[in-house]
Every structure is written in C-alpha cells, then in structure tokens.
Length: 156
DNA sequence: GCCAACGTTGGC
DNA sequence: GCCAACGTTGGC
Image (cartoon, rainbow, N blue to C red):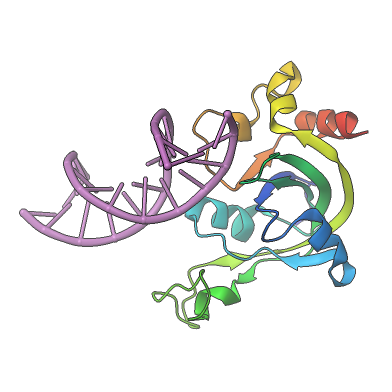
C-alpha cells in the first residue's frame, strides 16, 4: 500500500551513536538499537516505511539538537541487543520466538549545522512540535510535514 | 547533580 | 483495574 512519505525525529545520544558515527558506517546505515519504550517501538514497528524522512537528534549531551538528516532504511525487525545478556539493552523477558523490541535501520544522509533545542523552542513555526512539548520523553516522535519543511529551511 | 515528568511494575 | 513506588529520560 503506497502512502506519502512520513517524517520522524529520532533521538540518539552522540556518545553512543552520533551523526558522524552513522555517516562513517557502511552505507551510512545503523540499526536503531536500544529503544525500550512501547510507544517508540510501535512507531518503528507499525508506522515507519522505508524512505521516510528522519531528523537525527542528539540528546543527553552539552548541545542537544538536530544534527543531521537521515531516512528509514528497513522495515522493522527484532532488536538483537534484547537477546544479548552482556548488553545494557538485554531484556530477560524477550525470547527469539516472542521478541518484545523491534527496530529499523536508519541511513544517515548528511550532517547539518546543529539546530539547537534552544533555537527550535524560539521558533514560533515549530512551537507545537511534539518533541518540544513539556515533559516529553519519547525518543521517537512523528514530525508534521510543515515542521519538516521549516526545519530543512532552517538547516539550510 | 538536580528534578520534572512520565512510564512501568506489582501488590491488592 | 487502581495506584503507590520506583525507574528512566533528558534538559539544565
């Protein structure tokens, strides 16, 4: 079933996987491991399609903000780290038969200037973005087309 | 390190 | 199903 391209904002801690790390990976592709929130998982499992646009956001760092543009590069499949007892993402309640956690591959397209969280909050055109909502903790949020367009414009 | 906000867990 | 306790996220 065809549908229009959708857009997403995906948070990553740059100490774990930065936009530079993703661009340095083969084909710029990284598996989006470690999501352990059902709502974020459901976005990847149920809503994402190959080719969807992704804003690559750096969180948990000195300068949080959008650091690059990427795209969804696979359909959803089980996150292998849930089965790995040595991983911080290990989930003992997951089994190969019934995995809890799914992920998609993300392909980094380009690094951009850092569009800081501060700047995003200051822009009236972005005021109602989900990711800016007070108390929001979702690591993956859908992005409305108008917000996507505005952010690409700001990124130059 | 602090803390607001919110998700998850588990007893009942 | 309720809800208190606890854990996590993530900006500051």
